[in-house]
Length: 335
Ligand SMILES: C[S@@+](CC[C@H](N)C(=O)[O-])C[C@H]1O[C@@H](n2cnc3c(N)ncnc32)[C@H](O)[C@@H]1O
Image (cartoon, rainbow, N blue to C red; front, side, top):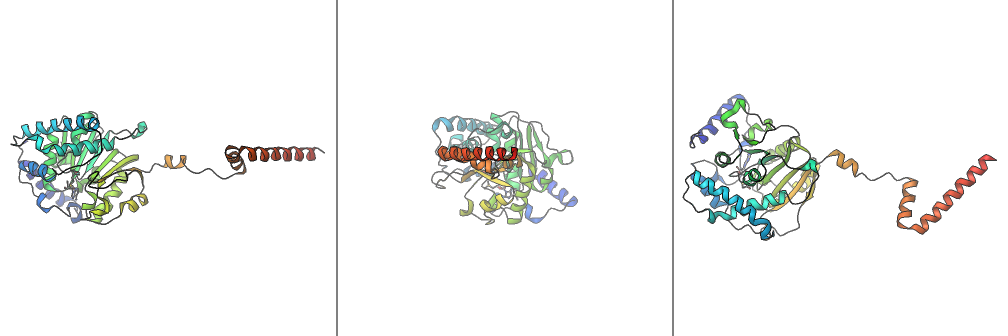
């Protein structure tokens, strides 16, 4: 497809969809970064690279981070060549450091098989960067990018176009577009969140996005994330929490637990100094998990077992008394 035309495809698609279904005004809004909304062309990728190229401190070891940075950079070099951009990839290495950090956090510790990641939704995907390492390191994934803003949407389309997985683009395919359980990259606008399948995703990524949305959209998306995540699936959020709220001041630490999510990981670190944005791993609450961790019922037997465990001497005395009493009762009944 002709590169320039993705902007036209996006605009046409919006107009056509708007004629067919109601697209509420709040769904296509970004409450910040007005200068990053109208797509001018491929050079906007360089603008975004520059915009995001500020230091990204971290505390991973060189051995952990370097191979991933290298991998991410190798794709950026390929992209620069394909798009004939006149820039030096080395100058934007920090963007690859950011990619590597997110990939490491999303894969930080062992999880049961049912939580392994194959189907990913990146919501508010920026220039599409999360697809870089995921598609290079895992060939069998279903990767979905979603956004509503023209400039990032067009950049995502470009960024996804040269990765090794087939790209399915909603704004081009429209009526034929369907997210299938088949490895590939699927790209669609926020106003078609109805096309995200129920109980489907293992991971939803929201980096530096949730507090940049208006409150109606945020709450609507949290509800949708709950619908489309599998039970136990991961919601990965990384942002400045209530320290940066251009769009809404919803306290997610309170809101998410009330809406079906449990917090699994949130390091106690200094934002912007030790890491840019606090990474958090939330899980869609899985009923089976909750059931399995319910406190046991307090019965005489469980109390006795606990006493035997913690205070064996007292436990033994109570057990003796119990059996004496039982024997006495039996004798009495026999007479
Ligand atoms: C600060 S950028 C972060 C980009 C990306 N997550 C990253 O970490 O590089 C915020 C992103 O949220 C997206 N966004 C803003 N309003 C949105 C909306 N209504 N629906 C979906 N995405 C939106 C922007 O287009 C942009 O891609």
